[in-house]
Image (cartoon, rainbow, N blue to C red; front, top):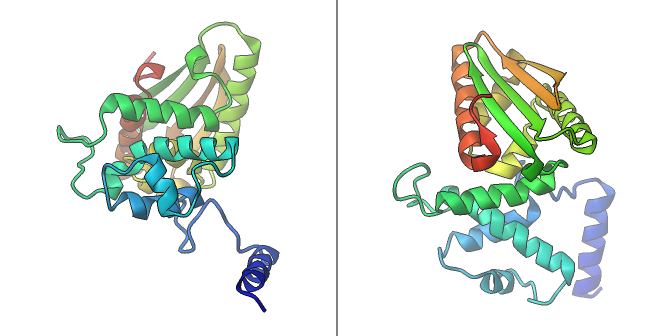
Length: 236
């Protein structure tokens, strides 16, 4: 049996048993396979180019055509989101932050456009803190029925996921180390999550009697307002 043949059989076995999970690592961390390969290489150098990164993980620069280009853009954006966690000297939120805020916000917008179906340039996020939690609102900036439909469909689905402890989408957009996220994932059963429609959009209201989770929700909201820049605001 040749090496290639053996490798093909192993791949088929992994897929047959459902062990192939491209959106998480073998140890269960919610990191996309592209990031899992790229991040160890990135941790070795803060100045690695996309070409050097591709070559270091055996991806030819021209491989995959448009798919390769999309992968590169995705990884480049995720570099901006995850660099603070990858490089120990980078202190998130400090004056010495390795990734400038404007670059991080641009990366968040790029990844957000892949996760959220509505147009970020035609909608506004509101992350309003309340005494026992928070109120997340997304409204279309006009009466565009398509944007309203997309906003409502997305927030409805997200509310369902959040109520089950699935915060994968915010982690994908903002990074799995975003403020408050871990507490929400582990404490979701103590959070009331309610979806409803509002004028030109929809909202999700998060409430809890747990003061630690209230702080986590507030921290989570602060992180989103900061990352979304001009696309978000702390109140209406």
